[in-house]
Image (cartoon, rainbow, N blue to C red; front, side, top):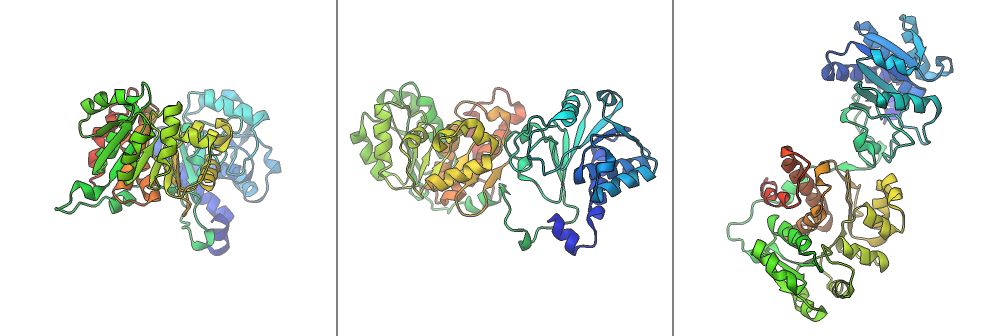
Length: 476
């Protein structure tokens, strides 16, 4: 997009660099209006060039500027060289970076590396990043926090922890994936007036919003009855785990499924019905007791609290013989990892550890490139896949992956995945296609979690989301 704009637009590369620096200066003044002393840490390439232009513009507006170069300016080329020369010709002075420079700064600007970094940070750059992160000074990152991989969001040894990142032209996938959430801070996009065209190809990700949910969850007909809204069967709740299947079942109810049936261990029936009498709950000793329930359902959800014993494995195998839209979570995914096969009518909802088992990889490798992992999962197992975590990814094999940038750390709690399983199953029961149910369900789950976390993230319970779901499925 940048190259196309230079090729066809009114500005050359240096003109875009100046526009980027002007946008960054505006963001500084809007966010830190009292900041009078800026420390700019500049590296090579266009990211360093952005820093030199920003330093020149800040000086012209009367701000105190200290520019620390991590690379001899004499080695700069192209637009970055011109940016340095314009800074120097206006009286700007370049210094070598020393940690003590941070003591006199109101704000640090990270202009060390741009989008092209693909190797671990080392040497003086590593020492600079460590010093920036150790200082009690706010940080603005230009385009991408230095040390963060712009495609995957993985940290290349060490990365700047920014309070604000101003990114240019378009959003980069690495600002939303992997470890990025702990490094980007508040994110601002300055497109520099460049709009995407067909020439640029399809986006790598599409951020989920409420639009698709509004389209599917329209007001019901006045003469609707429960049979119009689907019958969900949830199988799970092994020994000592009635809570998981109960949370999933209520999740399906709360998004509007017509009938919700649970097949679980007989000893759990009383507890589940006592806390939520709207759930139809059957104690199932073996496959014989499960088969009539399977024949009557429109949608299946397998896995919450299922366990790994013989009872669980037998029910899992029998349930997969029923070819209806199916949501697979928790121990159902662990069985699938051991006995892999592919279907086009299911939604898999693994967290990173379960994804690692499904792909026979390490959890660290999954997290290092979450976008590649969700693609591999969908390609190998079919259907739709929700790779859970900070920045959940949803892919159904039709178009770009969906990115859920809602949600919060309070949702890293037991039972949250069970609620998501029920939500997606309940949406499937109401006629949403596989991919739509996965995307809308993931977005709903995160949005309700954020609403409930307004009273505080720590101590947020999965069950807190259940009552909060109703307003979010009645937005139309």
